[in-house]
Length: 146
Length: 146
DNA sequence: TATAATTAAGATAAAATAGTCTTTTATATT
DNA sequence: AATATAAAAGACTATTTTATCTTAATTATA
View 1: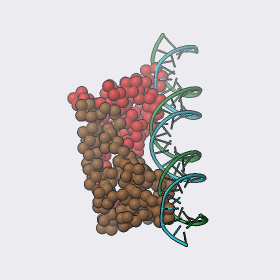
View 2: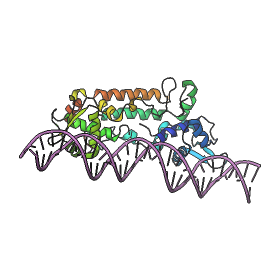
View 3: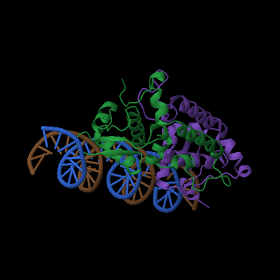
């Protein structure tokens, strides 16, 4: 698995928030129901995003979570790094310590190229970009297999 | 992590065998010592490769493991699929069930392209190709960080 | 101010992956 | 045939990831 489940869930929840009007708090219960993700697990993931400053939250009635910034300025890469860290984009695909230009693993050149493209592609996709094109491209954004 | 540790270890051990004369059995202890991989863990991984028909083994004195086929005809992809299965090359990067052309995740087109290239690249690298070029390209093939 | 709603926090459990240890089986050599 | 060597098999442990459950803290609203 390239991304952890926590990371996938975090991305889906962030896109859910991006599709709602900014400034409104959305309850985690609603998100977990609509996306078919475990409520408590999602709560923890969103706490991480909150600690990382990507979302804000409010307790109590009418509380919930909301993007901390404009959806234009948050990329999928931001979410991924907040949850899974930067290892995916730095590590040797064979897991060799010290793999690099001087002493490369047999996959080094190829994987370095691929992972950079992957990273650029994640970076190039803002939450707003995706949210705006859900209808046009019929994007699937839920764990529900409809 | 893109490949499991078991898979990385399996690849390194296979390359180790490929670099030795074919037909000779190499003890797992020697491989685990030289590559700095846990002996018992490696034994299990090599049992999988044995079950999958990629290597052969012999018990007793002078026993060990050896590639079942010519190193020319075994690709990294063969090893990966034997150990980790085909999920990496089939699954949605966001883990969405039913992600596909009709109802794609936002990363679908890009990732489908990348994972196919990754697969092709793994398929294109035979154990012999790599073994032959270790000196030329100064390949790192051990968990030891020298 | 009391109540209900909602996230935060922390304990626990389940599953997957990674790793270790012991015993059994096979085989080459003496 | 006896012995030593090495893989096979299986039980066990540890760690990480995923998931659940309970209680505490916060806050809007009646």
